[in-house]
Image (cartoon, rainbow, N blue to C red; front, side, top):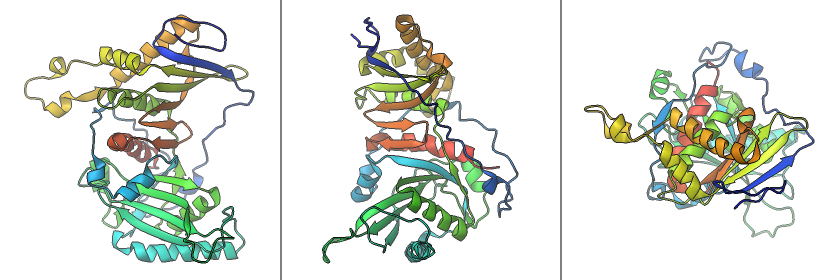
Length: 370
């Protein structure tokens, strides 16, 4: 059974559907990239953006016990935090062996910015900040991936006791998971590619950290949305994990182009979602030809993703006469994590975070200027 605000009930593969109207127009998350595109660069970027698209086929999600490779304290920080995504162009003369020096430099840069009267405000914190930049060992999947780098900024509460330790007030990390090997190998030797930047904390500190990276490593940052197609990929990839790890629900938020904008929250029972997904999955034995590798047999194609989403939209239309195809997918949530069009991601199950960040790394690489 389902419950809707307009008092309708029918048997569908959903547990609940909530329809709300919003008086304000959807916020645009696009921004100007003139500073990145128009400026001269050591990589000689041309004005414009890549016209490539996401891969039409990718490996089916595989459970990774990352706790065997990654420090549990670092992993705990990466998990269950909502991160704001950005892309970052390759870093010039960045060295993983110089992280302690970078920590001191960034601390001094933040102090200098405050002295100049720029906004680096943290509620309840003192004026001094301590920066820690470290490697997250084990967060690589391919030989060409650079090691993930974690940045933490600590400060002490204004009225804290003298012996009370500083607490984290801002966190961020740069990563590359299964980056495109052709692109990574084409980079000059002095460049390190960590295209996905995740941040959590005040906008002031985020801006200062980005500014320091830009000045120090001749790189540039840009906003990274998780677009309609990428959200559909995540819905399918996460649903594919249900047999091994219950997704508990598949929740989607759609917006429809009406005045005022109509927001639809569509929650699907996990077993119904799994049955629908299983019905559209191709039989690997039918897809395999001769000596094709088993790895390729266990791939997911964009056609399967689109058929899965079309099935979900078809169920919704039959019962509520609303065509979600006319709208845009803005958010996907399961027990494994949540993703928003605005570029926010939260991971709740470490076993499938590699699959998620492989897709996001691809998105970041495709968003970068040519």
